[in-house]
Length: 359
Image (cartoon, rainbow, N blue to C red):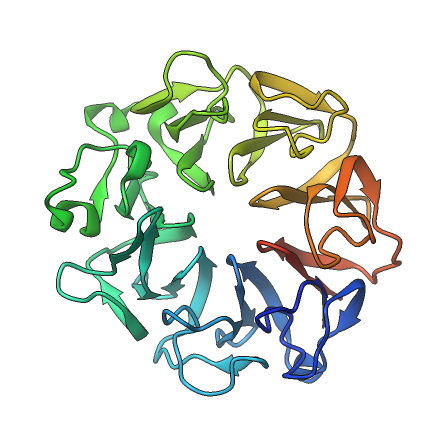
């Protein structure tokens, strides 16, 4: 296995050291040459990488504790969690990890548009992992300022900032405690098959939940149509996306992407900076089909996306510092990144950078 990085290195998010420069050319991250990395997740300005041994590494901006450790921010280093990690994700200043025992740990802090929101009812920021009161969790996800988790029964739990109703449940703006405490977003209908969820896509302030039937439900902010309907600007109500046979969901800043079982890809939401990968530069409250077929995997953050077709990576949208793999800052429609990667195992994108794991 090897790890490649490209894009902006303004705050060491490429992990190339203090002298590392921004680059549009995928560059090998030598730190991991002797470590078998199997999964990567990117936040706004930091990244997490998971080894085959269940060891978690971090690098990038650590101003608010997102790295979960002390020491050099410009190169990867291990986070101390005395359990084997199997899943993780990160947002702006928040990171979350899931262990083999089903335990969930968080560190950093949740943010809102007004600044730091807090991490727990008793702690504003933590530079070290803290265990959360959740059990039997199977997967974890992070939005820009919130965390979501799915348990063994397919129930979704959320906590963090509840701007625009992204937690999918009512909380009081004056009382942070309820928002910062994990709670289920579903109700008695969890008994129904179509409320058993298998994966989640997180946007800036919206959430997409994919159920075991290949149906997607969205809630949170809908200012730009990222929920795929015209009915509300923001809501805690779960709206079903008008598309069946969905295999993957992905949230960008103000847009959403959906991959079907046949490999087609659709999007909705903001498109002024080509986030939807179509020529027509206007937002869409309904699904539009993006001109790619046989899509295997898609990742999005903020205003750009990258997807895997065959073993080629394609990018579109707006990104700076070479994040798209090109000199241009805006790529209107999906374009193949001009680099022949070995077999791609996993990849993810942050605000203006991309990390790729190859075999």
